[in-house]
Image 1 (cartoon, rainbow, N blue to C red):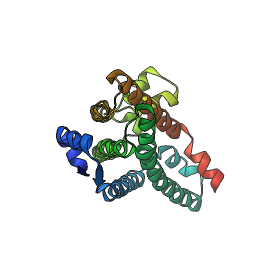
Image 2: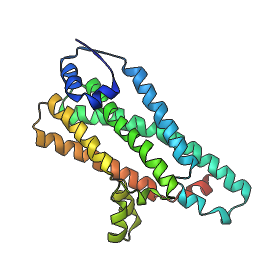
Image 3: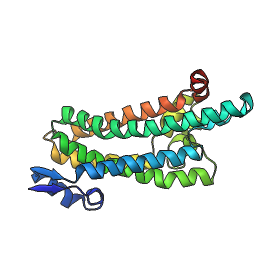
Amino acid sequence: MTYEMKVLNGLFRPGTSLYQLQRAEAMTGVIPKLLLLYLVALISFAVSTYFGIGAETYSGTITDQTKAEFEAGKLLLFGGKLASSVLYTTLFIWLGALFFWIMLEISYIKAVIVQMFVFTVHLFEQAITVPILVFFDLNQVSNPFSFGVISQYLFKNEFWQHFFGAITLFHFLAISVLFYYLKNLSDKNKYGTLTVIVLFYLMIWMLTALMAYVEVPVIVRRVL
């Protein structure tokens, strides 16, 4: 049986998609859909960077730099964000699939397809969250869909604020989609599968928090 890659079907018709994926011996349409996800992620990162989301610490240094330095820094920051979008997409889909292939012993290409479904949930999150952050002039930690708002009252350490700010309600939806597919594609028990998925997301949240915690102005100044 040949499985035709349809990202939205994977999210809105999971039963049918899983049935076809379990019996698939060959896949078509994976590469075009994958390139589309890269493109959408690139646009999403570009838009969020244009509106200054995730670059609040750098914007606050405008009085400490000349106009030329500040503009050059903005350009460097923009380029870095675009590069990070490609890196993030690659790590999430390809490295994530490799992680599940090793830990759960499932087909690598099927793991890639499932990761594409889940990554689409993250893109939907960006499409909804970015306009809200821009309209209400909020930073990532104050994202109303995340635990960052609560963490600001519980922790003074900025790293933990960023860590909990990286955990959003959309991630629970993504974890649900991931769990639904992987527990049916793997021979491992559902608790072991869920543990592996949670471990994967813990690594994502830690990495996201670390990247947000790093002082952007210091890095940019050293480069310039």
